[in-house]
Image (cartoon, rainbow over the protein chains, first blue to last red):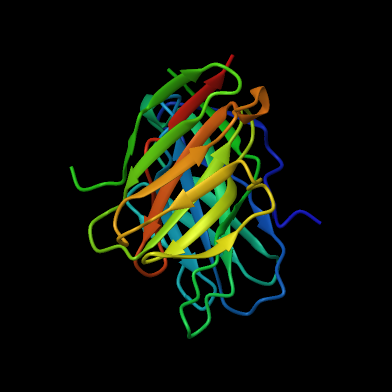
Length: 119
Length: 111
């Protein structure tokens, strides 16, 4: 089974509107982290937002918020007030087994969602 | 600039040649990762260092690939006898605790 599933290969949104990018995950670990990255055409993977499995509040970073629904194993990214510069590929990723030892397991990525913001 | 830096950003090489990529992580980050990304896909894990120790290697890392981090600071990824299937972007990342920060990547084209 896929560990990270992003079901939207492409999304369009009108400038200034909000958009939600879907992400579901699969893990048996109790302690894990969920990440969203933005990758513009230049290739750089830009960190956007992080949610720990034990965090009670949904993470927010400026115009980005993570809608974390643990029971449904979903971690959707919400971008408010879309801008033309938001057009990029967006990846959801998970890091399992964080644990108290701080073991640094690698990230597992989804296949991404290409977001296009329309003027 | 205090982010993760990679060099070179682009490399075109003939099949059979060796190539080496360098990664300078964020200062004081003790953990360093290499990933590979092909067009239309998410990055795939290759290998991980904690300080100078290489603690984990993916099955994707064939015998032609070798990575080092000799002093626990910068790292190199060498690909020997390159094949066309090695064409991809090679991403380096570093972390201190939870969040992993990526560099801009090194694009490799094998012709």
